Image (cartoon, rainbow, N blue to C red; front, side, top):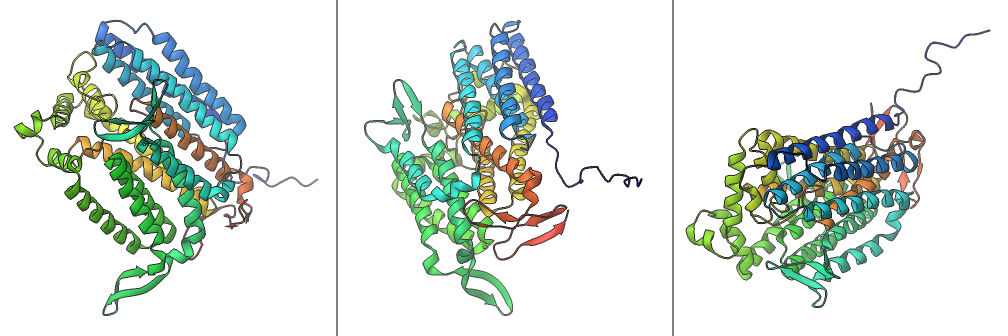
Length: 487
């Protein structure tokens, strides 16, 4: 009887493993870090473990364990690092929010709300996994998602439900609760752009003419009739800036559009034209609207006495800079510091609060976790087989990464402050729930990409060409060609 060759029955090295047990261990470690940091915060403030330590730890750990169990059934091949890293960041944000409000004598009401939003966010993540079983089908409804996204963006402009806070109309209110619709609209717009650019990428990649200096090509101009999507996106971004007075959201939305457009076409000329159009619109807004000029003035000279004392002036930024400096390398802890008394220290300035409480070392650790989240998104985009998946995941990964840059750049005076939230960390339900929904999409796309059966070339559910990688090969996406290279 012939004996099989050594390793004949072993799994192919290119076939991924599920790694759900590794995910469980990392998730429990993230919950343990939350419990440790919460207990230390209580000891630093009151000299004892917080009264709600058991409730918070059990609730937070139960939510994370429930999400993990749901992944075992709904997306067993999903990326095993997305859930643990997201859980760790959510736990850090919850700890800092509890510490800030407890140190200020405000009680646990805000941290209780954040724990409730965490439950809603993880439930939304699992809901996305359960609802989106075949993600390629989403591109069939791209114009429906576009319409829904625009409606959500415009809701705060309505006189009845729209709420204006500090000069910006970004919220709608009902029954005593507020929601920021633009946080959810961004997801819908990314899905629309991924479906639209996936179908139009070959047309958009064509150049009408090329500018040359001798034999050297320096710039490629797209055809004028293809400038429609660019002009429309620019107009929507400027309209959003005018209507809601939200510089940060308009900047992020338009930047995501340019990033996805470049990913689909690989044309640097599109990015150059888009940046020029946005700068022209921003210059016009600076000349017309006083609140834009005020933001720029605060950015240029926040230490000016008149700017500091003015209503809505630079006091918040200056106090944040001093708080960040007080943190030093290892932080001052929750029992000391000035961050608890700074306006919006738990939302817009959450990174400043982390820098003061945990120091530069802790802030860099949190930024590395945020970087790791974006890296897992881009890794999922690279592993995905069809264009729609690549554009959706890469666009949302750029959204989160660029949002962190805008927030961190604003509080450190690299760019003007925009009043945006930091993913997973800032207080507020809309941002947290929408970010967990993005994680649900990533988990679904990574589950589809990592399944062994996904190595079989096929067509996706929307009829798009889907020449997936053979076992042992990786597909490098290009709008004009598909190149394969040995893994």
